[in-house]
Length: 60
Image 1: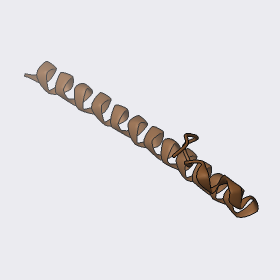
Image 2: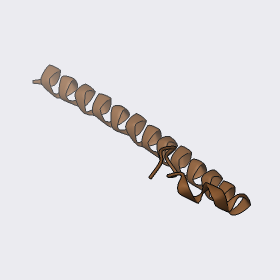
Image 3: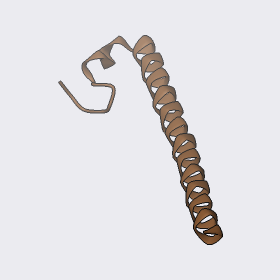
């Protein structure tokens, strides 16, 4: 019974660690996206002709 409890605890610990890594990665992706959006908005403010360019780099 002790081995089952230990194995379950190990699995839960590994799952929590993986979830924490995913959370950190998600936050990094969100920060990068926010920074890119800010950068693109600043470019639009500097050059109104760029309004025709979609923020992700495509065209309308």
